[in-house]
Length: 275
Image 1 (cartoon, rainbow, N blue to C red):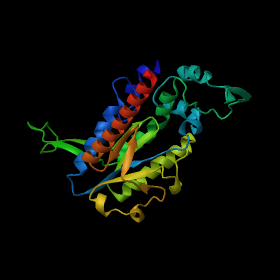
Image 2 (image 1 turned 90 degrees about the vertical axis):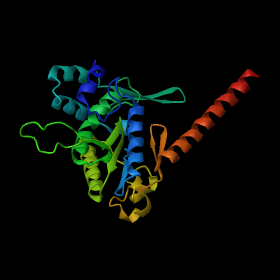
Image 3 (image 1 turned 60 degrees about the horizontal axis):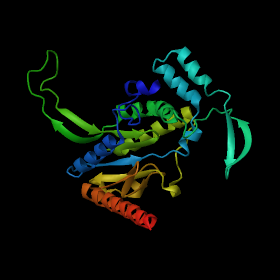
Image 4 (image 1 turned 180 degrees about the horizontal axis):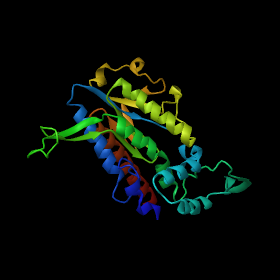
C-alpha cells in the first residue's frame, strides 16, 4: 500500500519511488548536466556519497519518525512497526542454519520486500535538505513571455532546469558548483548519520566517495583543493550500472564497450551450451 503513495510523499529526486519514476530518467538527467557543464566556463561537478552497508546500519525507529512527520497516522505506523518488532535473524553459512538471535537494534534487512521503500523514506530528509541549499548545474533556461501577474517582479524570471542531485535509494549523487557546497553536502551526510545510524565512507583509501569535476574544474581542480579529505577526485562515476565520464562522448564510448563485451559473453555462452 505504501508503494502507491511513495511518489506523492517522497522527494521527486528519489527515483526508487513510484512506477512513474525510472532510473534511466535520473541517468539521462545527469548526462544532460554533464553535457551542459561542458559548454560553461564555471567550475562544477557531481559527487558520489557512499554509505557503509547502508541497509544494515539504518535503524527503523528513524523511519517511523519520518513517516510521522509526513503525516502518516500513529495507528498505521504502529501496524507497520509491529511487523518488524521482536524480529529474529538466522545466520546461514553454506546453506547451514546457524544461531538465531533477536534483532534488538531494529535494523533494516537488505533484500526485504519493502526495504527499498523504507530506506527511501529514511533518507528523504537528507534529499530535501540538499535540494533547498544546492544551486545546481544549469541545464537549460527559457524566457517566459507574456504580461507579468500583478505584484510579480518584472521582467518575469526565466524557466530554468537545474541538476541539483539524483538518488536511487541509498545511491545519492549531489551536484557541486562551489567550494562551500562541499561543506553543505558534508553537513547533510553528518545529520543523516546522527539520525539514522548509517555511516559514510570517510576513509579516502577506500575510494568510495568520489567527485567528478566538470566545466572549468575538469582541468584546474586538484585533490588538495577539495575541503573534504574523504572525497577523492575521479574521472568517472557509476550510476546503477552506468558509467559516466566528464564528457558525453566518453560516456557513450565506455558504456558502448561494456555492452559489447556483455553481448559477446552471452553469445559465447550460448554457443558453448548449443554444443
